[in-house]
Image 1 (cartoon, rainbow, N blue to C red):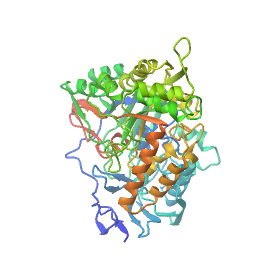
Image 2 (tube, rainbow, N blue to C red):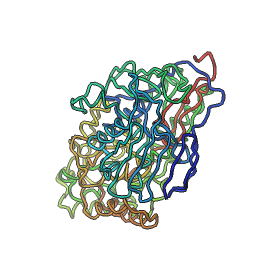
Image 3 (cartoon, helix red, strand yellow):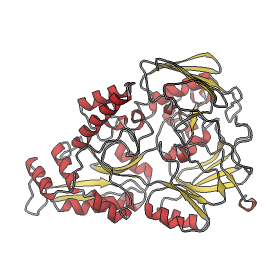
Image 4 (cartoon, rainbow, N blue to C red):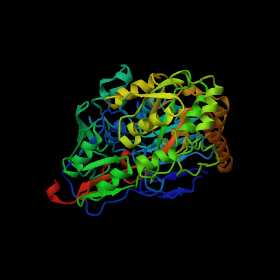
Length: 532
């Protein structure tokens, strides 16, 4: 049976999900006006069609609108699509676009823009599995786009989300120039609630309210200023001093507890369910000695993750065991936990032919911690350096001055080990498969299979689960997948991120849907006039 959803969220026919569909929530007596000065992140551009992650995703979801948005219960909501129909066989999704939507240059948003954007995302986005079954997009009229798929694709609805499917103007981006270096990536034209007015790489991103936004009366804020503060302690101090008033991602328990004690601040852990963020240690499986599974397993036995989390996170964060986030119904604990075992680690290293030299050293490796909080990046690297040394493995820290530098090293596979923060993105097809499929080894593309990991059985399991309509069979396939990947150790999973967002108490309408800060901010407003 198909599902059709009206602009106000009425269910015309029951869909396979059985989920009720809610309409846009209305803020209680929202105030209009004011500026939001917040913490931003360094990024090369602000086009989420070409790059995943929060640095481009947060500003990108304000600049570009997507077909759908989601509430805090995983329900799809109308956005650029005022209604939609998912076919009974799961092989087509029809989007009926709002007729009042225009881009920031005044041009209307049409089905041709949807078709063009999906083509751009398919070709250039690192999440190759996200739209892999899409064969094409039919455009029978300017306000109808029919996405055709070669097979059922359980992830297609979530793939229409703001940070995953920004609708680009074909008349701007389709001018024949290379999309990857197109000047509009840093001077974009979107149809979202805010338009970009200034982009200063490494300094700030400034957005202004788009007065012709297709949801009447929205957005409420006049302006958003995203200040780039690379140093985390400096950013926290700026929030406490009210130099900035919003940090969308606080990454450690200790920082959240510290900010929660400030009388003028609100701290919330709501709004990160869809993201499913994991902190992990990646191994470059194409480089010696890490191309040997025994070496990777030995390093896993040396890590002592519970002790690390007690030291760095106060013991308030659990160990992550698998590539699927513990909050997912597809998660399993029936895997090798790699509990700390020095003797087993040394035996594996000996077996792999890496005996200790006269100086007690077996080999040396370099680790690239992702720029961020010490507890989740450099602190992890420092802890592991001490642990690995016990077995004669020397670990050298190579810190990056900023995120783009780190990303270039990892994407270029110019690393041995690297800490990383990676998202599940709701459905494993979107956020998990990309890391483990052999065909997604794409040098130069961050958050693809940068580990150069390849296991044909894993490839087959993921392909089967991607199209499996039976929930029980799908869960069994993902269980076996988790067991295989954990044993192969292309990645050592450290912990789920204890994300929170912190803001001034006078800022209302914080984004607490499943996509959290990577949702449209058209409902955010200042409660008190003095903040405006």
